[in-house]
Image: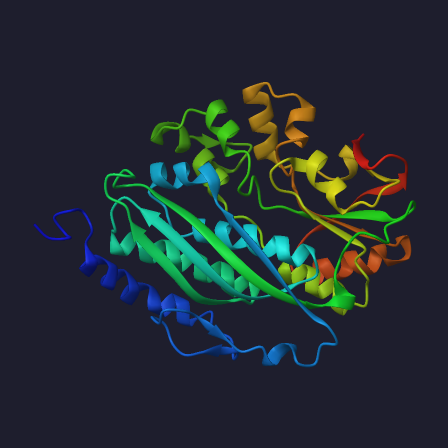
Amino acid sequence: MDYKNAGVDIEAGYKSVELMKKYVKETMRPEVIGGIGGFSGAFSLSAVKNMEHPVLLSGTDGVGTKLKLAFLMDKHDTIGIDCVAMCVNDVACAGGEPLFFLDYIACGKNFPEKIASIVKGVAEGCRQAGAALIGGETAEHPGLMPEEEYDLAGFAVAVADEKDLITGENIKPGDVLIGIASSGVHSNGFSLVRKVFAMTKESLDTYYEELGTTLGEALLVPTKIYVKALKAVKEAGVRIKGCSHITGGGFYENIPRMLPDGVCANVKKDSYEVPAVFKLLQKTGNIADEMMYNTYNMGLGMVLAVAPEDAEKTMEAVRAAGDTPYLVGNCGAGEKGVTIC
């Protein structure tokens, strides 16, 4: 009896590391110390020495049951982008610049090419966010997980000067809300998606005219990363008063998180076009409007609160970064919360 017969293939682990190295190298920043394969990742803090009061921000998350679609479609090269996005978008919401990222993959069986494909996506997400992928772990769990399945989670560290933190405390009635377009369903609400649509290869391979693609391809589009857009707004000289990453809980849970007491948010449904994937989901599942806005991003992955005089400058900066902004509402006086009208 040996470890391989017990279900853990150490040689496959070595091969996975070799296959992923080229992707990891593409994410390196000057502050990274040492190479790949050590017991820890080292990152110099020289980049923060010119800040008055540097503050570290951290975020951790996973991809959730969107992984089920990756399994069914046998497509694993973008799910890592989702993992990075869920973490770096959160820290960017607070004004942080992502510095580095670590991933954790738990699998039933280590298939080196599959693991390398997952990490390729993680590296692409890090590249989009400007973060270094400085470490990770692949754990083989025979008997605990089915051989063909895996789970993926990550952890990001960012930095901001304390004076540049986005806290929401200065939002006031009259401020405007700028929404930034999402790429689709992102990485939340897939437990409901999987109840609405049959999770079979045939169902996911079905082409929908309104989507312009198959259902599976539309649902598996990776989560958009907003780090560059938020950085562009800051560099345009705009003070972002509040920022909300529209994830699980949709509009109703996430927008109030950026609001101070005594301020409410009003979002106008007709201020932008809701993407077709949400319309199809709502129609097929006979889902009420309130549930849709309480579960999904409905086409807006980020919502920013800025002074009204900064609205156009904010939108210009977002466009210059390659994203699509919308003026979606405003802030008013009232009990903290959000009204979708």
